[in-house]
Image 1 (tube, rainbow, N blue to C red):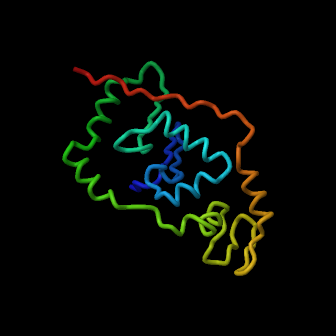
Image 2: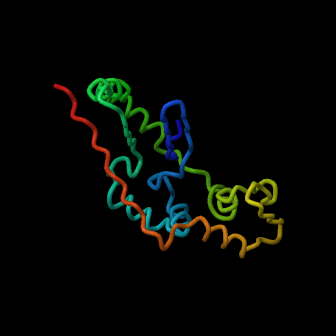
Image 3: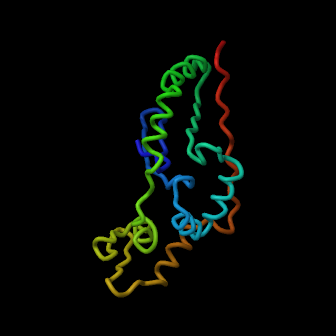
Length: 171
């Protein structure tokens, strides 16, 4: 498990996908955070996370589960099984202690990080799946700007996420 990044696990019928997401905002150093919020739309996303999903202890790191099922789905049974997976207080304290000093590497920010976001490999001089060719001395700023603008959702209303409320624990 990676305590530094969010992950999305989607499972519907026979289809299953597990994808790594972005860095959790709360694990970034100040310079890394400043770089991340400079992406179009990212500052708004960060401010929304701070406002709506921030926990004093965990920051924005969390688990969200959504189950969609028919009348045969037993919510209490599912909740009971999930509760068995939770760490106890001692395990959580040990985990928190082991991971407290872990931070994302700086190489995922700045120019190297920008190249990675676009699918290019910084180790190969910027060549990669994005179609950009960044030589050792020249960076195509116009192409970088176009990619950043194409990937942003600025000007479009963002749907408000719904809060997932866990079911009450059975007595």
